[in-house]
Image (cartoon, rainbow, N blue to C red; front, top):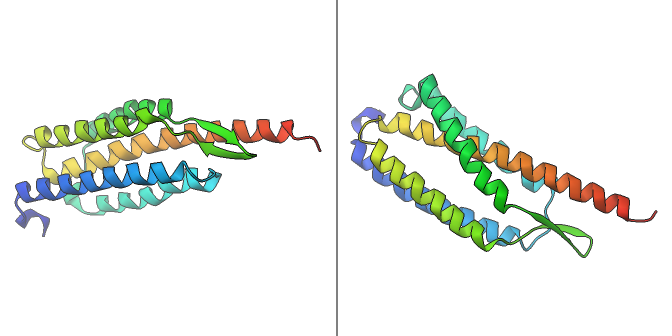
Length: 166
């Protein structure tokens, strides 16, 4: 089924999809900074994203072990940048994700790097395998980032609990 669609069409569709997802992530991140953070808001996105692993049921998307390691390593490296720009602050007894002007530019930069890599790699790696690699990269990026956010959130929440007399 997937083999009958030309790789150029896949590349175009996935590139447009990546741009929309990037813009959506920026929009969601900007709005979420205006509302108090919670453990649920931090931990649910990776859980929801994990359903994307179902793509590997189809042989078209399967990735060889060396490419899994490469994609995970790239994701972990990218996560460091996201961890660096994600900080929490306490306001009016609530914990909020701090707005970082750099975060939007970093997200755009990561999106551009990803799109450039996709265009370059699509000439040497099958488009289905490349899609699987980019999902692994994204998952490898979101997991450490969200774990770091959770740890930071819990430290601030515990500090605020101990500061409240009672």
